[in-house]
Structures are given as structure tokens and as C-alpha cells.
Amino acid sequence: MFIGEYQHTVDEKGRLAIPVKFRRQLVKGAVVTRGLDSCLFVYTREEWKKLAERLSALPFSQANSRAFARLMLAGAMDVDIDAQGRVVLPEYLRRYAGIAKETVVAGLYNRLEIWDTAAWEKYKTETEKNSTDIAEKLGELGV
Amino acid sequence: MFIGEYQHTVDEKGRLAIPVKFRRQLVKGAVVTRGLDSCLFVYTREEWKKLAERLSALPFSQANSRAFARLMLAGAMDVDIDAQGRVVLPEYLRRYAGIAKETVVAGLYNRLEIWDTAAWEKYKTETEKNSTDIAEKLGELGV
DNA sequence: AGGTAAGTGGGGATAAGTGGGGAAAAATAG
DNA sequence: CTATTTTTCCCCACTTATCCCCACTTACCT
Image 1 (cartoon, rainbow over the protein chains, first blue to last red):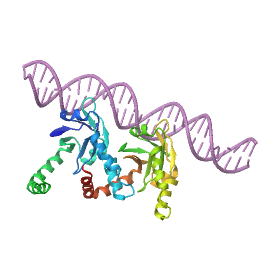
Image 2 (cartoon, each protein chain N blue to C red; image 1 turned 90 degrees about the vertical axis):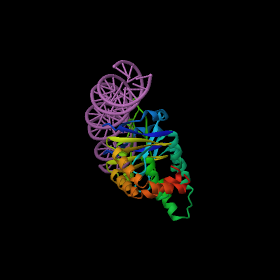
Image 3 (spheres, chains in turn blue, cyan, yellow, purple; image 1 turned 135 degrees about the horizontal axis):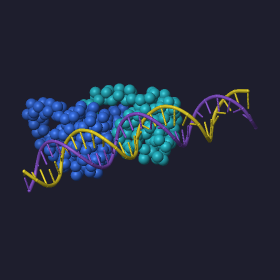
Image 4 (cartoon, rainbow over the protein chains, first blue to last red; image 1 turned 180 degrees about the horizontal axis):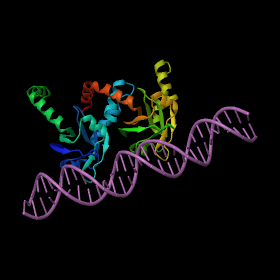
């Protein structure tokens, strides 16, 4: 399980070091996808497979199912960890998440999230302001 | 399993390089056909066989299911990958998908899609606008 | 303070992507 | 049926990107 928040940098070749605490779980490969709120999600291959099978089961005769599958499946990328513990983030995913250099890698239980540091800070201050509202909504979910 | 998005070019002879990550699954040959939303679908021979059987089973009484089956079945073309990892896209399919030079090859689990790059970008920006619907769908799928 | 491991940067080998020429095959015309 | 043209396929060559390795710096642990 992935826990914690780390500050890393993407180099000119688009490589990002995976924090050591996460590596062992990802040595068999990882899948990076477009996430929500302009960040990237990283799943283990097994986790991804479960999700992808549900996505691919959507009927391609429906326009919004196609759009959805295209965004999630075509947006995903199979990556391997190199000897230095890094993955290459394809250009289109970096562009999607506004990732240039400074990034945050955060563990969210069954996935990682990769954020541009500035976007992460912005998101955090915004949600902290609304944290009481959010807390109330969570109550509805039984947390 | 095909995932990811790749930028490739079609040359003057109508040849398109298949991304390396997809080749191994297509060495036994592929079937290219007219897809939905002005792109081309590419299947492995086995996948195509399954799909073609389902298409031919569509009720002949309904005009739109006939049209749909004709579009895909009649437009289908058996292609082989050459020594450089390329396939030749017949002229009528390139014309159908508006493919001139710059193309996107996208993996959608059990098929590939080939798009004119400009059309792909346009489609994506349009669907990303509806991202709230997408977020809801993700919730339904348990992401 | 020293040793070890993590994170980062960069160079070189290798493979992928692309373009073009020429041979073989097919199609068309005489 | 032959000759000519056109198309298809195979091969070679170049450019660009990717991968692998090495090395340095920084942080952490003992």
C-alpha cells in the first residue's frame, strides 16, 4: 500500500524517480494514466488490469462509452522501472498534468498520484479552505 | 492488451509504422477497418473473427444495424506487418479517416485506433470538456 | 564524521521510425 | 500473346529517440 508524499524532479528526458518506499511494489511494472484534477494516476499492473477490463467491457456502440474508454485506455501507458528506480513519463501525459520539472509523488493507498508541485500546492490550499464542507460531505458517506 | 497513445506519420506510399509495444501482438497479421468517429479500427485476426461473427449476426431487418455491419465488414482489410514494422493503409481507408500524414495510434485494450492527429486533438478537447460526466463514470467503476 | 543509499544528470550504444530506390508482380494496352 | 506501364513489396540507409550504464551530489543512518 502506498502512503506518503514526496518531492521529486522530472529531468529533460522525462524521467521521474519513484520513491524507494514504492518501488518494491512496482518492480513488475506500472501503468500511468490520466487522473482527475490534472494529475496522473499510477497503478500496479494487477490493479490496472482489473480497471481496464471493466473499461473495455463498455459497449463501443455508445458514443460516451467510446469517449470514456479513449480517454482512460489510450491515455494510459505501460511503464517499467529502470535500474535507477525511474520511469519515463510520455510527453502527452506530462502535458496533460502540466508537469515540467518539480513534481509531487503521493501515495493514495492503492495508487500513486503525480502532480506538478505548483498545482499540488494550489489544490491543497483550496481544499484546506473548504475542509469543513468536505468533512460534512464525508459524514454522509459514513466516515 | 493495447494501451497508450503514439504519434506516427504515414508516408507517401501509405505506410504506417506500428508502435513497437503493439507489434508482437500483431505479427500474425491484423485487420484494419472503418471505425466510429472517423478513425480506423485495427484488430488481431482472432479478435476480428469474433467481432465479425457478432456483426454478421445483427438483425437484417433493421436498417441501421445493416448499415453499421456493412461499414465495418465491407471496409475491412487484411494487412501484414513488413520487416520495418509497418502496415500499408489502403487509400480508401485513409480517405475515410481523413489521414494525410500526421497520425495518432491509440491502444484501446482489444483494438488499436488510427486517427488523423488534428482530428484526435479536436475529439479529445471536446470530450475533456465533459469531464464531470467522466468523473461520475469513474465512480461507478470503482476507481 | 564516515559510509551507504537515494536522487539526479548525462553520454554512448542500440533500436525505432522514416524515407527512398529497385526488383518483382500485377494490371493494362497494343 | 507480348509489351508497356503501374503498383506492390522488399531491401537499404539515414535520423531520431530510447534504453542502459556510469558518475556525481545529496541526504540519511550509524
